[in-house]
Length: 110
Length: 194
Image (cartoon, rainbow over all chains, first blue to last red; front, side, top):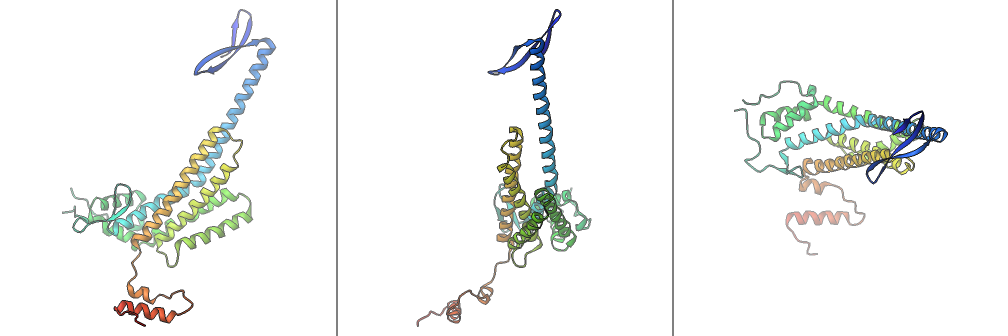
C-alpha cells in the first residue's frame, strides 16, 4: 500500500496476504516508516534482479538447445517418412504396424 | 481435386513440405511416395543438411557445458564420438547415423540438466521449476530418440537369411567345426545320431 498522508503526517502501511486476503498492516511513520519502506524497496529490487538473471539464464539454455530441437524434429520426420515408405503406419500414436494386404495405399490421383 | 505430385527437387524441400508429403502418404496418397523415396534414397544433400545440424547442436551444447574449459570440451567431443559409433553400429544407414547423433546430443543435454539441478541448491523456486521442466523435456527427447532408433532397427533392417546366419562366424573357442557341421545337419533335416 505504501505511504498514506493524513493531514500533515505520512504513515507507512505494508500490504500482506493472509489466508488469501490482502491485508494492509500499519508499520509506522517518520523514521520507522522510512526504514521499512527502504527495506521493502531493497527486497523488491533484489527480486527483480533475480528474475532478470533467471530470464537471461533460461534464454541462454534455450538458445543453446535450439539446433537440437530442429535436429530432433527433422530426425523424427525422416524416420516417419522411412517407415511410411516401407509400408508401415502408426497405430493410435503408438506402435508402428505394417499395413494389411490390399489396404496399403490407394491412389487418390485418379 | 486430386493431389498433384510435387515437382520440386527432393533436396530442396522444406521441412513443412516434407511433413505434408508424409501426411499425404499416411493418408494413402501413393503419388507422394516417389518424392519421399527420392528424398530418402537419392538425396545426399538432405542427410548432409541434417548431419550439419547435428554437428551444430553438438558444438552448441559442448560450448554450453564446457564453457572455456578446453580439456572438458575435448573429453566431451571424444565421449560423444564413442557414443555415436556404439549407437550407430557397423555399417549404419544414414537415418540410423542421424538418430545416433540425435541421441548422443540429447544425452549430453540431459546430463547437463541433471548436473545443473543437482547444484541448484539456492536458486529461486521459479527458476528451479523451469529447470526441472527443461530437464523433463530433455529426458523425453532422449527416450524418444532411443525408441525411434530401436523401431527403425527392428522394422527397417533386412532380416538375415538362414544362409547368412550360417555363414557368420561363431564366437566359440572349442568344437567350432563340429557345431557348424551340426547346424548344417540340422538345416538339412539330418539328426546327430553319434
